[in-house]
Image (cartoon, rainbow, N blue to C red; front, top):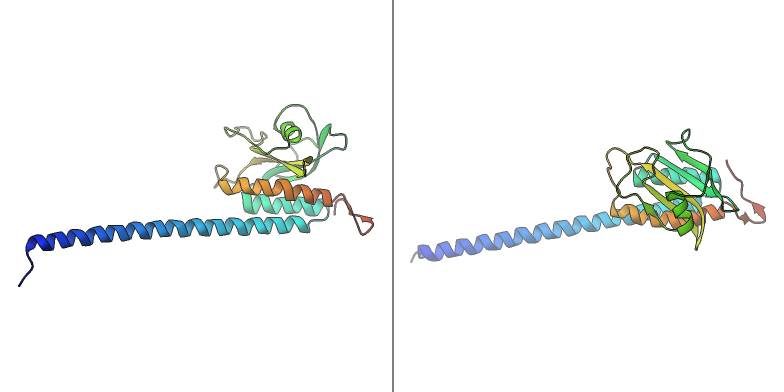
Length: 199
C-alpha cells in the first residue's frame, strides 16, 4: 500500500533537517581542523624561531637571525635592533633592515616608545597604527629575566599584511625572552674565550 502524501512530506522534511544538521557539523569540524592546522603551523614557526636564536653566537649572526624571523615569520622588512648601553642612558644601533640610512646610530633615552620599553620592560604596540614611516608599529624589549638588554623596533609590515595577528604577539613574547638570552650569550665568554662581536 503506497505511503500517504503527508507522511512522505514529513519524511522529506526530516531528511532535509538531518542533511542540514550534517552540513552544520561538517562545517564545524572543518573550522576546527583549520584552527588546529593554524595552531600547529604557529607552533612550528615558534620552534624554528627559537632554534635559530639559540644557534646565534655573534652580533652579525644574531641580527641575521632577527632578519630571518621578522621577514619570514612576521612579515616585516623594516626594523631596527638596538642594544642598551652599559650606563642605560641610550640605545646603540646593532643592526636592522629597511631603515639603515634613516635612523640615528645612537638614541638617548627620554620619551617615546623605545624609552617606554626600556623603562617598563614590556612589549609596546602602536594603537592606532602610525602613519609615518619612521614611527614604530611595535617595540619589543630583549630581556634577560627582568633586565632589558636591548630593543627591537618594527616600523613597517609587508603590503599583504595590514596589521599584527594573534600569533604575532606570541612571536613577540618569544623574541622578548629568547632574543634577550641570545643577545646575552653573544656577550658572554664561552670556554674561556669571549665571543666575537661582528662577523
